[in-house]
Length: 289
Length: 163
View 1 (spheres, rainbow over the protein chains, first blue to last red):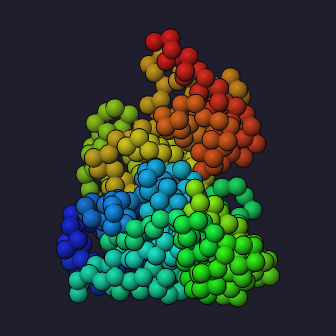
View 2 (tube, each protein chain N blue to C red; view 1 turned 180 degrees about the horizontal axis):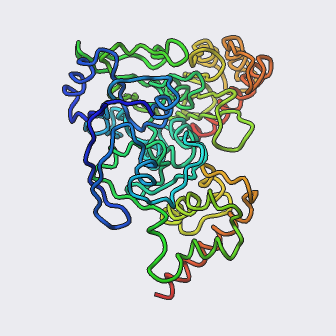
View 3 (spheres, each protein chain N blue to C red; view 1 turned 90 degrees about the horizontal axis):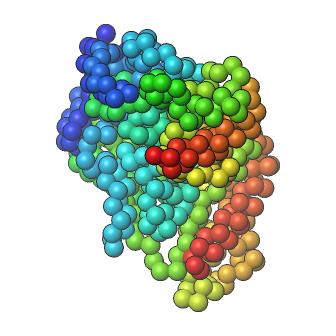
């Protein structure tokens, strides 16, 4: 592997300083499951790798009445290993459980998955569905970005030189809510999504009507999409095949897939509709439990 | 060139201090510096699981860990699995069930199996297949490996009961 320096700051302030000093030539390291391979193949050529795992704020995993705080370096296995978090933020746990294999989940973080900004990232549609906010630290202090506005292109995002992701904040889950993430892959495990859909729904007390819904799509465009239109078509409507189909149509309309080795454009559009329907149905089932 | 670092770590119960460059992976250092060549290099990009070791009790692919990240960590490699005499129940089960042919993937499978059984001493076939999905084998077609893992779970239970 090409040569680089290694630093492991102990605080956010120190990390900002280190990253700032290298003016874009430094790269934050959390689980390293993307970064180390990308350095090896030459996609990234950092002069310094900044290990941010030793910063306390990046290891926060805290469920409270205010919601969920997920530090940017918390590995996937800790997310689905917590039964309360898995129950309340089920889509997030679904994603964490299928990112890579067990060895990858020991190290890889949801924050890293977001910052890698792959169009087919398995956690981003769930983050969108669950209304996550990215908390970013940088030379100018902290700022917050809604997760649906975080990615700007394949491998690209809103982080400026010197900035890094500190944590993801999720609002508390309302009563009668449920969420789910599912992807289509030709294998059973260890594969990259052909299409991925995350959904969160809130139902009325009787579980018969949608109060609100949020749908996130992966692998069908240069960035993961927030399908606002799908949520609007569900809000206030009865839970029925017909209304869910309207939301699925909104997802299909927004998808802009490409042909590649994993699937054709036509196939991906079809799967987007089917998966959206199934994922909403599962989220409804969970909301009713 | 980046300055070399001293890394203190515990490997198979022994305190080890080693010298490495930041760019060296844990896999590289285990094999080339420490001569622990039981851990195998397969794909070197995190797909095949041949280089699986346990880091603080969790299975990781050592090709995607920088050696400097092992500072203060507890590591277990295939060399630490067998007791002084004989074999670990997992190794015994792999032998008896003919769960290997060329053997390159075997150390990784055994380390993943150790982690699985620590977490879940009585796994179903589905649990085994899901947990081991990050370990690839091109020889066996997996069936014999899955049988060996299920068998080793039984062997471990008996060994615990006998104690």
